[in-house]
Image (cartoon, rainbow, N blue to C red):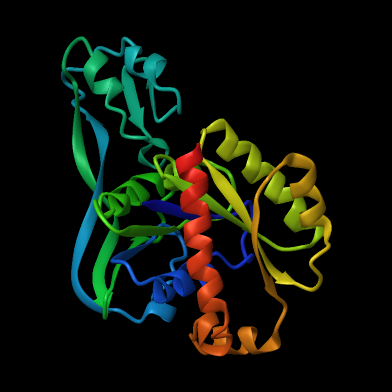
Length: 280
């Protein structure tokens, strides 16, 4: 089972839920921190790092002697990562999505692909919890290749929890795509509701079964609960607003460290989202 912990905005508590779930379940579990621009799951898992791996992307390089300036490479590139200016062809690596189209279409074979280091993956464990985290190098613009590299470490058995990047753009889609289900974490605020709607539209478009978790809930009847009823969305859990949780978070402690009664609810949460995925 691969469960994406996602949201339409940052700061809703994705990492809080991800880490608490990893410590609560009794089955084999692997936590993948896919928020490669700002990974922070390791603060709570505190894994013993076993090894590190470099992540590379392929970017084109042009042999000026072979290039005729035909412009075919620029016409096939949807991201303007390569353009032909008469006798000179220019490459913009920060825009390249490593599709390889320019190298394949070049009639003279002037374009070849070379490896470019863009990030690092760290692999470790804390007790029975296996941990993988990606980190994008400073100055890089493309996080999806690093996210895909992290996702190559998904478990083939047991439970894989993916702590996803915020928003609903390419990094979010790369992280949640292919997951069995998604838990959309939100907060009962106008911004929380607005961005939840964006996340709901996105996972529906991707045809991924999902449920909603409300963090920092003050009352069970709130704008998120009302929206979920209107849309027929499963509201699986509401985590109460509690200063102790915020204080524990600031010290790198998990949700269940201060609210041990949440452990059973988190285990039930996994069962509920698994059932939703099976029914879908």
